[in-house]
Each structure stands twice: as C-alpha cells, then as structure tokens.
Length: 160
Image (cartoon, rainbow, N blue to C red):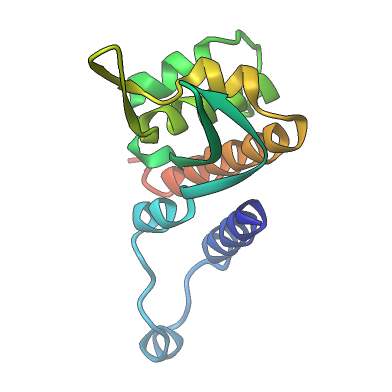
C-alpha cells in the first residue's frame, strides 16, 4: 500500500518537472510548488507493514521504517557499491535492495542486548529475512527514490 502511494507521489513529482515553465497567470493562481528535496523527503520516508513478519532479537518485526533522504552520500555509495554493475543510469534489483536496507537500518529501533543498546535489525537482516513479496515492495520503493532524486537533482545542474 505504501508502495503504491509512493509510486503515485513519484509520478506526480516527475510530471511536475516535465510540465516545464508556466505563464505568469497560471503561476499566480496555483499554490507555490514545494522545494524538490522536501517533496523527496515526503515521498521517501515512511513505514512498510510486512506481509510476512520476521524475528530479530527474539521479537517479531511487523513493520520497517525507512528514510532514504536520511542517508548520506557515503552511505548510499557503500550500499550501491556492494553490488558491482556496468550501468550508471539505473540500479539493479540487488543495489535497490541494498539501498532500502541501508535506509531501513538507520530507522531501526534500539533494543537492549546483553546490557548494551543495539539495533533491532540491521541491513543484513533485512536483505536475508524479507519475504519475496516484501522484498519486491522494498526494491520498488528504492528504485523510485533513486530515479526521482536523480531527476530532481538534474534540475540543479547548469551548463554555465
């Protein structure tokens, strides 16, 4: 469900970019457009309810929070470089899963384990324990983020 909402929001974001410039009258009548990074933050943060929960630290994990915009460039690079590829314009399914796992690990709640605080689950848990259906939804969200952020960022590049 969150996947479909995220896809609709990504489509809306991309449609706004493709519309180009409007004339002054249309711009004055409409509500001002949000900053692209704010749109990405709204689009790429949330919780995914798992169709098939998994166990970690003796607890059932029924949902996974994620925030792609919380990742640093270095964290994204590390996640994407886990899986070598030859295409710089698209990410593979494995790269998308690594990206989702990194975004979800940052949002994982802390639990006490042997007297010290640790994350309830980490990226490795997510990649190894998600069911096929949950994996597919997570992978699609990561690809949507990657494509939408790339297109939004391309608007900030000039030829000057």
